[in-house]
Image (cartoon, rainbow, N blue to C red; front, side):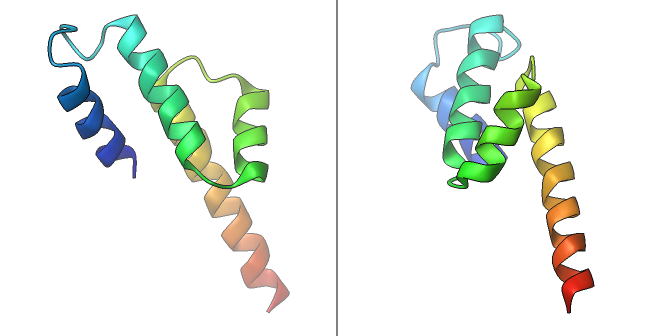
Length: 75
């Protein structure tokens, strides 16, 4: 999903310059968090206030691992 969002951003904003532009990173971060389609994950990520798209992605991956670990322990 993260790669899809990056690809769509490049297609949607081809004239905005380098993808490391701060505005691009904000757009990517917000689009990624919104696309999670999991209110619990979205809230937890927003609570941590990631500064970059990469920070939001890393946090989402950590939360997913923790969640799956908890689910595995219940079995």
